Image 1 (cartoon, rainbow, N blue to C red):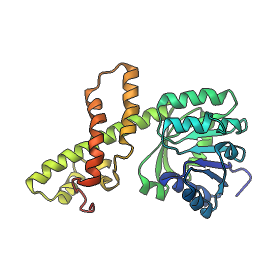
Image 2: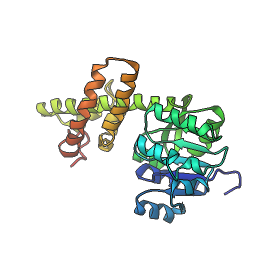
Image 3: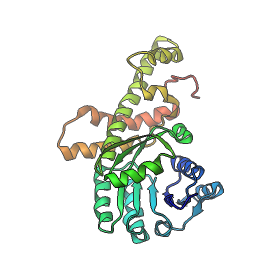
Image 4: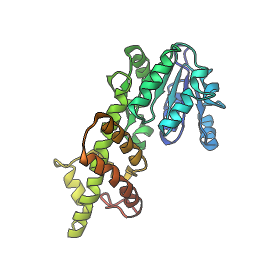
Length: 278
């Protein structure tokens, strides 16, 4: 590792965060981690990371902290709460929010952090766990150019594509729209699959044909990965944006309700588009 490399912290080392840690260490970065799951921490330490006892303790050791926790409340606690990052990170440091949260959340964090000379990189990620393993994620950046420039170097270790959409908040806007379209398509695949099954057609062969047609989609290609685990949270973010804009969007509202049942169906008896699901 050279002295010019950022000292990286990762808070929230679940399935995606662990892949980030792996790629960062492989690229020669010093990585410090925090997670509420002791097994995850032990695994990351086994890969070469260093464990910290709290976000504030991590903040003292790093220049660039990546957040991968699940919800807006957790992001706020990690950054703003007691023993949070803003208590300890030095001026000129960067906090990158790769959690999927509401645009308002990262905008508020940016305001709080800027008063201490700390940059916020709005950096949600797209694509699934297989892409994470291969270092081929997509990052949707929102932020000032100097922050984005530093972020590109770090995120380039585990992302094959990075799109800078604009200011802080617009990365999360892009992620929300991405997720809305993902769940619209995924619900459609459940209903289309049920219709197809009723005719006796071979779903695997049908999928192969559709992947060559105008019905081709990433959701259909990655059907085995789709779990709907975070779908309701995603749609709650979209619903909040819809309400703030005063928009009446009946399809979006229906999708928010439909993902609840879709999660159960996908976990128990989904259309077997690939022939791999049990």
